[in-house]
Length: 375
Image 1 (cartoon, rainbow, N blue to C red):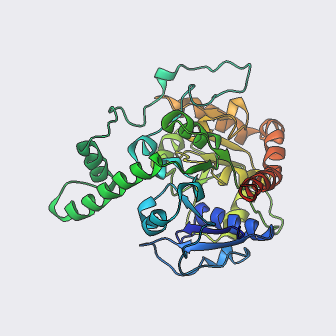
Image 2 (cartoon, helix red, strand yellow; image 1 turned 60 degrees about the horizontal axis):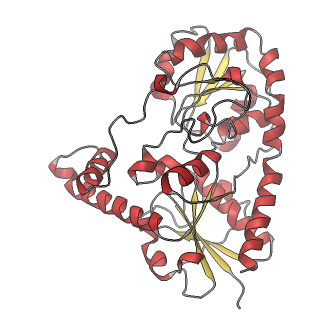
Image 3 (tube, rainbow, N blue to C red; image 1 turned 90 degrees about the vertical axis):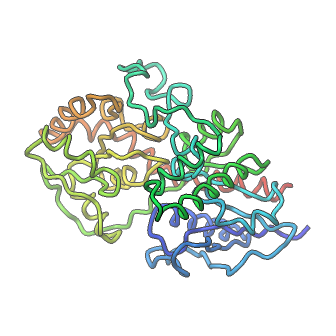
């Protein structure tokens, strides 16, 4: 049997954690002596990877040829962009990696939010201080699979029902319907987080294996910590930052946005605290990158942040998303600004856990490649 060849569908040109994780995947497969390529997704910008990812050995293939041992790897984000490859690849050679569960077009993924039936908020033996009904729902409307429900979800994603949006909404509805068909196929599932693994098991009724990524934090110049400096993800936390700012008025809140990777690393290294307010569709990198520079995290535990096994940063520093979340978070944040000694001690085990991500990744990658070669 010919050796396997992997084609990894990727939004070429984007500078986000997704393309970085996919480039890392191709690089890791090739390091094991197996042929692998990035495959540009349709309708996404760019024909070359962002320069920051040039460190990876991840060549780009113009197309995926037919072949009995060609394997297609795609993410959950937009299966319709890989329509041609999905049509001619047998199910056993298709691998869907759920990197960002809530970015899938299917409503039950997009609107998924974890509960105790999916993963534990607290570590074993520790009681949580809230009940599930106290949590704000991500969507309080019941989900269905009807055409009307799909169209309504498409309209919400595209921003309305006006005349000018009819075409884009129709296209989005087709994308949702096609994604629903793809996840019902007998393809292989994998995920980057326990949050994703819980979704696949409890919502799709399927098993999956875990292949997380790991932060690649370069050495930077020695920069002193700046008291009262709090950084947050400007792409996801801006709409909530005002709620906490009013309660911690003396802090300097700086968003991470419009920066190079080195600038992000330097900012994280100087901060007293990284504040995570966004809904995390997977095991987001910023809290892990902050840990690599010795900067602790306080998070609003949403999405993958709800799952203790994805973010074991300490029970005090994961704030449930209840109606009074800001009032509960503010004294924790202020306490860190007053004296960060305790949180730094408390999150020592998290920093060690983050440092072990690369070895866990390599172990999982070895197991995946062995399973393919043993077929």
